[in-house]
Length: 336
Ligand code: UT7
Image (cartoon, rainbow, N blue to C red; front, side, top):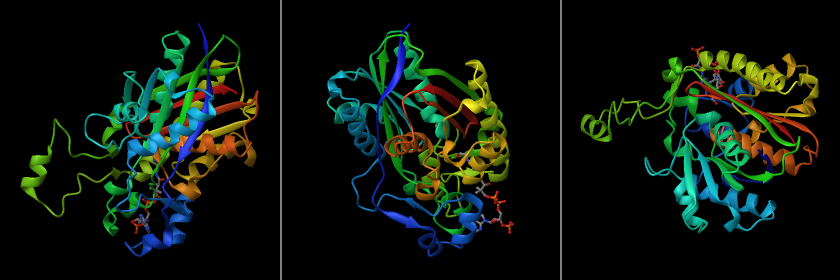
């Protein structure tokens, strides 16, 4: 068995900043409500007419990660791409990255695990590396939410939360050491699939032709629906559980955490965990204030920013944790 380590990180967010005040011109909302309930001050939304897509933003983040890994792009031998907002219904964006980077015919896998997408993607890549199947895997999380949100008052409970952006990591083989990804932990609970969902179009339920035929202006099924308070309560429990599971697996304790990078769902969720685990302000990294919830991109963007800011040093215990639609949740324990 080999070890796997993150050898390069990159991020990309669109230039266009949308403040809470900007949103209040589109719908009945206000800066005070959004900041108090979520911590979000602004988010990035791809400008109309921009070339940015989920795949192309992923490529931009990936190029930075590859350069920082000090490898040639030809050294990448597999791609894992996590998103809930692919450019096309199919194929997924993994193959578009393969094409854009000119990576001959390397395999590309798409992960559909929403806010836990990057954690799931990293887990897949980690195991491919550890078993010796691949040497350098490009792992991307990218989302273009803004085109699919209900930007009227009807959708305000969801739309004010989500932002666009991409993050990427190169996961590389290392000789077996006590460093790198120590373990990953994945869970799901399909019983609650409908609590955070975009229902249409769905192959087995209601396809595009039905939507067009019905042409119902009150149809909300193609916008995200979220049972906010229920999701919130489950997130608090599952985040805590899966962080503890990861630590205990490695005979570690909460006090060993140097930096926790939680999926950026709501600042109140991060603050709850910080308080529960008695972590200091410098032990929990948050950037939801600037970017909102970028789903599969949130952890790689935050991890990259934390690393760029010098908050992650060699030997640190870095914990990633996510929870979201599915429900799915997971954690990654890394000795940097
Ligand atoms: O990333 C995947 C996982 N996602 C999460 O973990 C998100 C979990 N949930 C949440 O973060 C929170 O539930 C929300 C931020 C989505 C909502 O906050 P909340 O404190 O649960 O508010 P609420 O949905 O209970 O709504 C409270 C009130 C309602 O009005 P009434 O019925 O009390 O009169 C809403 O209509 O706030 C109203 N409201 C708004 N007001 C102004 C909902 N959205 C807005 C808005 N602006 N954008």
